[in-house]
Length: 239
Figure 1 (cartoon, one colour):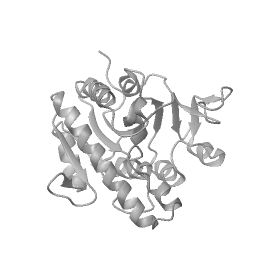
Figure 2 (tube, rainbow, N blue to C red):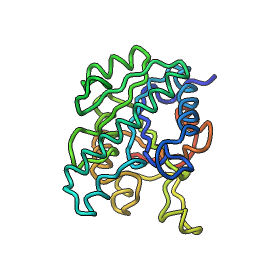
Figure 3 (cartoon, rainbow, N blue to C red):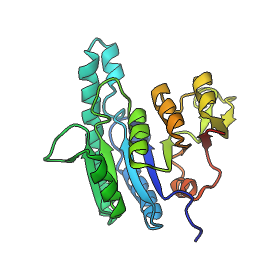
Figure 4 (cartoon, one colour):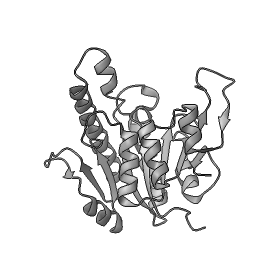
């Protein structure tokens, strides 16, 4: 077996990806698929941390558009990510992996509070770390959480697991003629307004030189391919 290109990574999962074909809620089949793929890379000695969204249960920005106070709506979204994190923890532990959920909002009965040094120590001990509740602050997305946590734990890359096989110039699910990008710079993502991650998160990755690999989660083996440095999806970096 070849040596993995990356030894410590953040895997960013959208809530929508966890919904699978259900469109809403948590798909058991998707949980199993994700757990199996993470087990593959964990067996190679890769240190894995997860950041999960909550859009399959609640989206704060959608709530605010309906007239709800934005901060309250965002806190509800953070709680939705905790539900997803606990579901992922259960699936991973059923595959024999040790896990820890670290929440940016304290809820000691179900998760440890997020402490940077504790997170790094868990990774060094071979545990899968799941970051929940976003940054703990409203107005920040889980994309920003992924970029922030990646910088804090000195991750070598962020793996962006999506429902499409990369970054396109328009929505490939709506436009059959959408053009796929195989490689992009951070500045291109920002200037073209591409939906890789929000501008705050992209800028944070650019400032800390954290590469992004955007790929299709539904394709089995893609997480392993990304870890090994194979050319899949879209790569976003400085050059």
